[in-house]
Image (tube, rainbow, N blue to C red; front, side, top):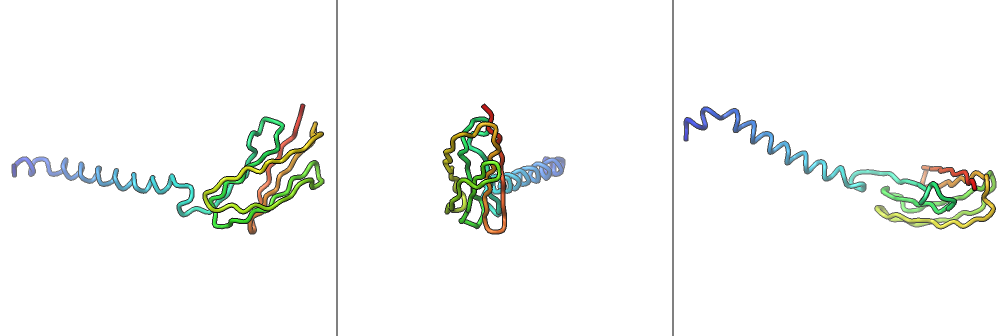
Length: 124
């Protein structure tokens, strides 16, 4: 047994090191996969970007919970509202509008000092 360990000490040490590294990296990767762990971001997107629907979604992964949104047709504000959204939550805002042919729709969302905008041009 002693001669086996003496001959294979490098291989055994390398194996133990590789297994411990693999275990450590798996733990770190699990934390990185969590969108709320140590991160501060929020996203804004249309529910279906190819359709004529103006419904948009706010996905919150930040500490701010208050969102203000505005919908513009061309350059005139048509809708506005407020939403409370806790961290880790997603909310779809339904917007209904008519006579959208060949018009540019802009959605602006404000949260704290951050602002995000998305655009859509409706064609028939």
